[in-house]
Image (cartoon, rainbow, N blue to C red; front, side, top):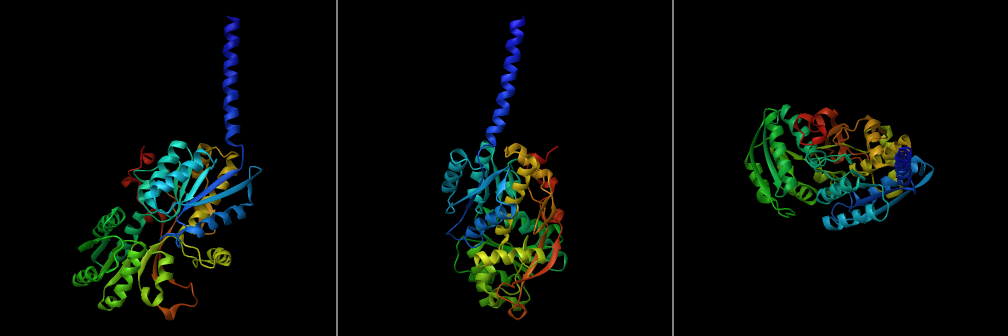
Length: 404
């Protein structure tokens, strides 16, 4: 009996030792962060090198070390191809000892990375990918979403404009999952605010000629025409709206997913008057202006939503690692949700259980050329929307992490 008890005690001690060694093994080596983004494609101006430098600036501002070890940064181009992005993420997580992946940008790439990170128990921070499914049906305890999403794009702005008198809407949507989701959420938002969608039409992705679609929108006599598309589809539609001088007919153009890089590419004479929503603008206050000045000096352009979001995610992650005293992902993910997010555009921001970073959003309008005082003075901020009105309510969420 004494021998048996001794064996049991030895086994228990070995198990405890193994657990301790496992925890220590998880902390061996540097903290390593990978920025997976579009470096050369159609999203590269909104994401790309700027997101990489956003992460680099966060690491530098943190001091370059955590837990007594150097912080390493790697990056790769997913080429907007889900298979390329997934292969890169797998190599990083399985072979290269990357602890967390940031940015991503492309939602199709992001879905595969979300599931891989879940299976590997590694952290992923979405700063540019806009699908609300990342914190909805596809939510993960290891994933967090730091910037805009499709719900925010389609909800806050249409509801506000409807309440202020733009009761009749026409929706021009890209004929793929993102555009259809935007259109559906916009319709729900408008009708919920007492308005009506009087017509809608879908266009193929990468459309160059929007004339027939815009003429249909004009003929509807809607107060507002919503563009439920993105990137080149959005900019092409805005260009042709301007060419047809449709803004002079009393209709308001609402670009649901307009980005800073889009406005800069269009120029104020073309984009002026366009209304949209955003979670970040470099000229919000003194703190955002100070960050933007540093960023511009390094990159020769102002930071976008994704660049700011990547910085915010990486900096908060490093704070959580330091506070936890370990880089163990299960401990760190809990600490990230426990600690408020504080940085140059985040003031005690909470992270919800589904991974949604509950920051404010803004309704903005592109300035007229005569209003602009500089090459990046592009927006007027019309209204600030509180977090609880910016993001999908818990009661409407499909995320099991929010269920009792």
